[in-house]
Image (cartoon, helix red, strand yellow):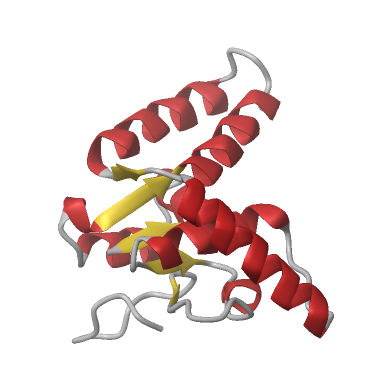
Length: 145
């Protein structure tokens, strides 16, 4: 299973060839959406000029992707994992954005990898497999670097 982070989902929504190639390697039920990613996407859409062509197209794409992705909860276990991960990062002086920690925590709790176009931040989270969707997949690979 793979949790799409905001950068990977945003690129897929914009029909980035690399992100779409990675997504095509996996059956729809294997790709997951979590609340922190949905919140960031909704925020990005709300920042676009109201009733603009871009807002309409990206909102339509988000709704299309929500039908394909499987929603995973962000519950108490993810909240606990978030706290543990953030404290460990802080102790090492390696803080990253809280949303990234929340997304990573959800992936860890659900036994999933995280697909991102920003692997540097996510690679700081202990116990998380990070898949780089910023480049096209290598032939014969299932969506890893």
